[in-house]
Amino acid sequence: MKKEKHAMSSALKRWYFFAVFWPVFCLVFAGIIMGQSGRTLDERISDTGFTLFPLVFFAIGMSIRRRLLKERGAATALVAATVVSEGRRKRTGRNKSYFPVFEFQANGMFYKVTYLSGSGFQLVKEGEQVDLYYTPENPRVFYVPVLQRHDKRRSRLFCGIGILFPLVGLFAPQIREFFSFLP
Image (cartoon, rainbow, N blue to C red):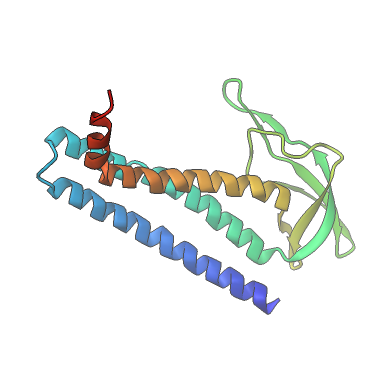
């Protein structure tokens, strides 16, 4: 248990480091871009936008990651849960989201909980048995590893966009020069 707490503590420290310093680095990149004389005004503006706009994606990815870390830090007791509903909800337009509902027994009581983060894909099927970790003090705080894997991938995608695109903006002159030689 002590190792798990230490691992969660170091994971949160890494999260705080990246959540604070990457946006600061991007602002420094924007300053470098605006200060370079080799770029036209249009190039400076577009490259700066390429550096700053993806921070929205980075913030979304980091907020997903923070939620996952909090859930994993609090929910430590393992139980087998049954998916009682796929939790399909219709949103605006034709898009559907799935917020699965799970049922499990903890501390002699039955609990029915809904996953807070929706997905556009049906990740679990009704009647399926899944592992569920819950907080012993409050079994309504939980996470499901099967669903967290999907959320981790989404977080990585958003953070990846938020990291890669600012670097492209910073190195845009070199990239433009490279592609200028192509036919």
